[in-house]
Image (cartoon, rainbow, N blue to C red; front, side, top):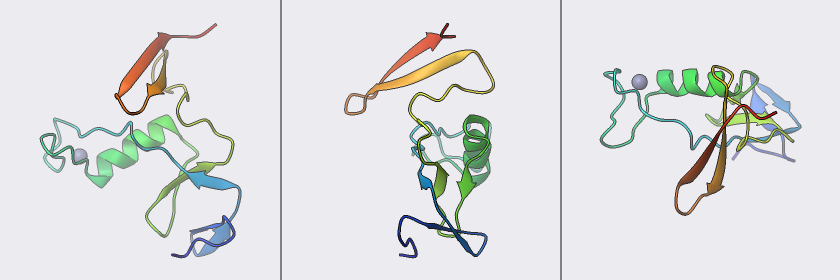
Length: 103
Ligand SMILES: [Zn+2]
């Protein structure tokens, strides 16, 4: 473990004020020959694209973890590429609620 005092190693420096990101939303790309939809494996390239679409300010640490700014709500973050908001309501049952643009 290289995490110290809630800091993360990024670009050989320790950065603070970040938390591990929830990456449950990542899905294998059926059109990608590196991903494996059957085993729910998403290759790094597709993972990277999906993470950056959702959280443009996320960072990939030297410890191979996705992190985002503390205080960012990564369960209700609005997708940047459409007008939907997805709320993870029930982790155990994999239930998602999808809302069209909140007013
Ligand atoms: Zn892929």
